[in-house]
Length: 156
Length: 203
Image (cartoon, rainbow over all chains, first blue to last red; front, top):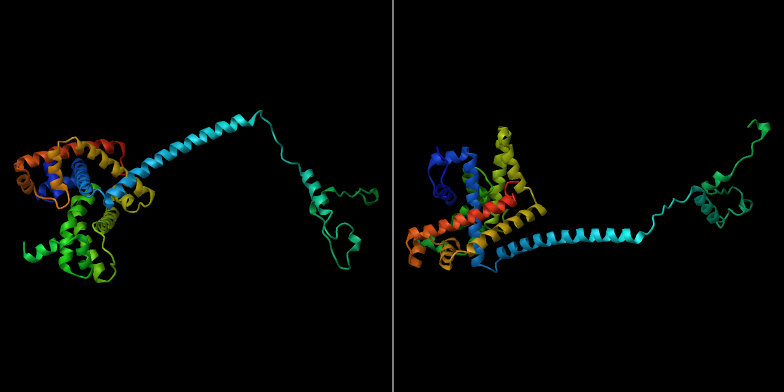
């Protein structure tokens, strides 16, 4: 069977077409199936336009206007955001001046800071004033600076 | 048409919905008459097979009536609710088909993508649809006022038959059909152009 005509497709969309052979053809023909789907979309769009025109202030019209507006707003927003990023990057590059390299604080600096902080910790200034059974733990970082002198008598 | 039928036809959708929710079968019949063409169109536009469309667009009403009788239907917003119901039925049928035959997998994906997509996806599809509407509307604006009036009379709210419109405008039925055919051709062209840029219906 040959492909369906536009008129036949319109009849199917309108629900007035009863030719079984043509219906079977549509079921097995990709081209006619695609054309049928498009014809249905044409019909939907035309109905929508006619109804919106007849009810310009209706919900449907408002929904469609919102959809269009949100899409435009989204596009504008993305463009504006991209522009801002470019400007911000440019300003950051200009304001940096000559390149300099900052090294992270060394471990020794951190230990010194810990040690200074621990001076005022109660009980650590003079461990001998602690009562019986009391135990004070100095900051572990201080232990790095405690070295036991090697004693030849101990074989170290 | 019987007098009783004419009486139901005179009711608005909201009035019919209230009566349908109260269990009046005549209200369900009238609602089905009004909205089934729209359900068919929505499914056909998605590229679903014609036989499946015919089946699910009837079955969807049966499901809704069952829901109402079981007391699980509180509101009835049409045609949206019945279209969603029909799409779910189409999805189920397509899944079964896909399970039985591997060849239907692509179709199932198309329906799945449509029904299960929420949020941004829906917004995007709606926005693309709105753009397509705008294009077709611009094309329609190019037609003479008389042609646009004929179009509105046939497609607008309470759409009239070709013969009624021909009589109202003093035209022959053939001329009315010709005008509509030209409008459809122009709309089709605009839609093809729009779909070339946004392939949202089939993704």
